[in-house]
Image (cartoon, rainbow, N blue to C red; front, top):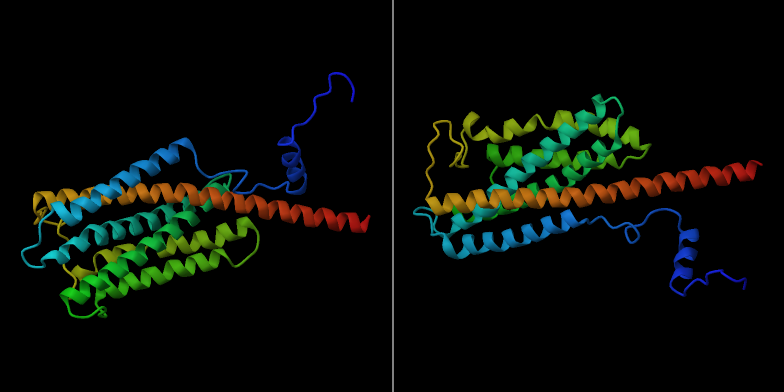
Length: 268
C-alpha cells in the first residue's frame, strides 16, 4: 500500500459494492420521511389519542341515537377527507395538464391523494353501514346518499386502475388527469343527494343552509377536532406516498435506460 492511501473500512466496502450492483434508488437508501413529516406524524398520533378519548369517554350520548352517535366522530371526518382527497387529485391533475412544464410531481400527488381518498371513502362506507345497521336495522339501503357514495368510491377505484394500464409516465398522467377532472364532478351530487332526493340519510348537522347548528358544544368541538386530525393524517399519508411513487418512477426510468443500453451493446 502506498503512503497516504486511505484504507477503506469494513463498513465502507460493502456499501460501495452494493452501490455498484444497485445504481437505482431504493426505499432503504432513500427514506421517504423527513424531520417535518416525522413531526407531523407525532402530532397526528397525539391527536388520534385525544380524539379517541373525546369520542368514547368525554362526549355524551345523543338524545335520539344514544351511543351510536360516537360513530360520527369517524364517519364525518372520513367523508370530509375523501372529498378533500379527490378535489386535490383534480386540482393537481389540472396543474399537470395545463402547466407549461407538465411536471410529473403534480401527477404523483394526484395519484397519492386518490389512493388515500379511496381508503377514507372505504372507511366512510363501512362506518356508515354500521350506523345504518343500528339506526335503520340493515347494513345497506339503496338510498340516494349511499348509492352515490358507492358510485364515487367505484369511480376512483377505476381511476387507480387506469393509472396502472402501462405506458410512459406522461401517458399515465394525461389519461388519469382527464378522468380525475370528470370524476370530481360527482362530489356535489353526493353531498346534495339528501336535498335533491328523498333520503333516509340525515341532512347536515353543521353545514346547514340556515346556518343553525343542532349539536352540543362538546360534540361539535370533538367533531371539528376529528376533521382537523384526519386532515393532518391525510397530509402525512400523501407526503409519504407521493415520495414512494417518485422512487418507483425513478426505478422504472432506470430500468428502461438499462434495457436500452443493453440493446445498444447487443447491436454494437
